[in-house]
Picture 1 (cartoon, rainbow, N blue to C red):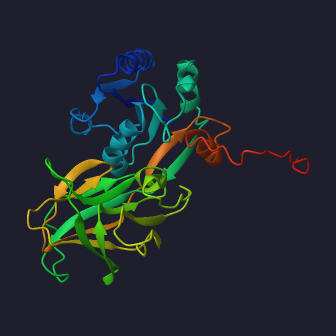
Picture 2 (cartoon, one colour):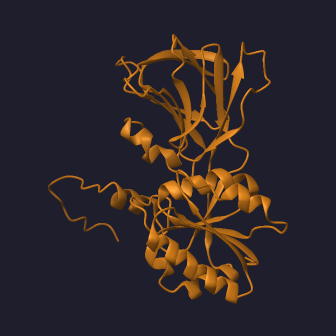
Picture 3 (cartoon, helix red, strand yellow):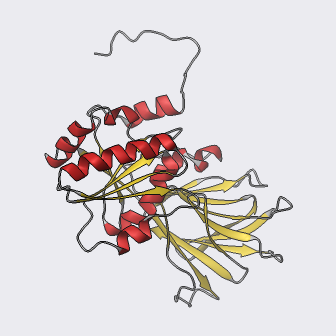
Length: 306
């Protein structure tokens, strides 16, 4: 990998993350690399400025923070084909990130990257757009929204909890109407986030699939469903007189959806690409550690396993 031009984004408001970003920037600049550094957070989005200010390709994005910082980077950089090295500096759970100790010898990291001694993990993303009127109208009325974890359709109100009424189609065929807190459409990456909390299935991120999960449905028959990645999930808000229904992407507000409109959710054209430096990376180990799986209270030794 060439390191001629690199983005470094750090968790906004976190001094430790900022200091580490500055240290990495100095090291890379000494190697002749042009570095763009900036904070990323709910009120800070450096990526549009970064992408608009460069003429040469960006070789890598180094993202220092937690999963939220990595999600924001993926939404903006995946369409550009920019690989992401996400490191858990100032974050919490860290499902998507390399552990912070990979930067203990950061000069060695730059050597490994330049020598192509790393792996790349591709993670499917979702795209969503809203449409007005019946299904014959294929002209979108909104921007294109991207998500690495999930798209969520649910109401939002400042003064009360609202029950949503949603109708879902899959590939143009009505599947069900849902009454409850909303609907999640997740990627395998997002299956261990909000979808997991809503009692959806865990799906390996090596798969391309879409997971639809009702949020607190008022029906025992409303169950999660796993779909082929080529499916198109359409969601229509119903009986929403106060126009409270919203589309959320990775927990960030995308747009409002009114009755008479629909949102179409499908697999995005490009996947997010994450750089892996750990030689012993294991998704199942990540599940055990991050979800703190304890298993049975009584443990037996398995002497038959090598």
